[in-house]
Length: 86
Image (spheres, one colour):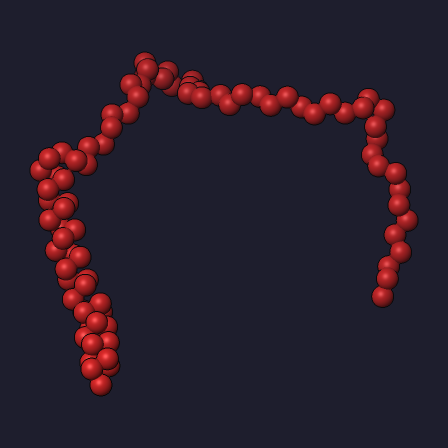
């Protein structure tokens, strides 16, 4: 009987009291971080000169991967006859 009573109290605490406690703790943490400047967005990279209308500006060009070498006379694999198995 005592086990069931403790189990019910634990489930009650997890279901109803834990969200309230977490909300209070997290709200206090967020307020403290905002006061201390903890949530500072880092500055973005400095933009260059403003683009001329009609001009395309590319900030990053990915490196070109070397293509796999293929034999010059290769036109595909050999033909394999397909037979359906039922």
